[in-house]
Image (tube, rainbow, N blue to C red; front, side, top):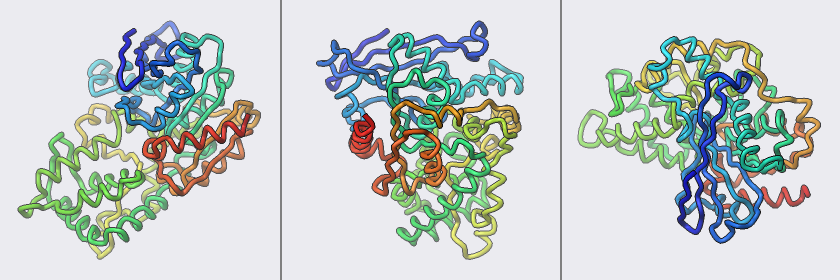
Length: 430
């Protein structure tokens, strides 16, 4: 255990050993890391715990720099625990070295199947019992962390004192196909809004797409920049500053010549790499919607065919704008990205798996007694608002707040206002 201080807070490192498979606790073990944060002047106070479950899947917990408004507000009332969910950050990592250790693709897929929300919740329960004992704690789930919090309510509500969800309320009965049928139209709207705001970007995007169609372009990371990979930059459009970032990227991609500039390629590489913290994001993204109803079978890739406006070849052969895609995972990503290529066979096996365990218990959610509140972002590009609204009628006692003021990253950019509003809702609960 390591203790450090800064920005008026005390940070304490915790590392826990947990089973890879909680149903086989005597088999392989992995480590899970969490960072405890509390106000230094309140270090001796018996403040309640707030577990933060962040976005992903596959992203480490945020590393505080002192300017996080939601964290500063939370620390007034809680000691906060930032969990590096299994496979991320300082927890036993899942990265390109895994296929070198586990060479059989089937064994890789089996190993990777233990990194979904159900396992994360069971990790959290082991951590809670170690740090807190029998007392329940509070949980704040952002994005994918909200899906995890809903799983927590389903299978271990005895460990929860209260639950806050920000932009992460799932449609618990929705299949992956239903999710993407709902999301592609949302992404279409984001494209239209972007091109309305920056009409010159229509020409710029088509010019880049045409060049990529006719030339092989390798990014500094070794990633192949295909037209489809370029389209995937649209994942950032769901962020508050995403449209502006995309516009700045498209402003002058051919600076000083007829080929994409090094500066443009470097920035594209950064944006593509910044989408996720590691391979788990790509490997298990569709599996977050899988619950024993058949394999996802590259759902986003299949459902895309139902929305021909995203067909890059057809757009470039006509006068149509080139549409950017959103938070969708495609099988070609495991061919073009050198960090994902070693997982290619395992990724296909995971996509075909049909017997995923349930992530939610509808009956228990309908009988929920844990005070729970959630913010739903009206124009969220990553989670369909209507599917989330349906969940507000499933989880007994859940208080929703639907807002047009923020995008999916509202918790991060609102300087604590989103969390403050959720605290007020929770106060009404009590």
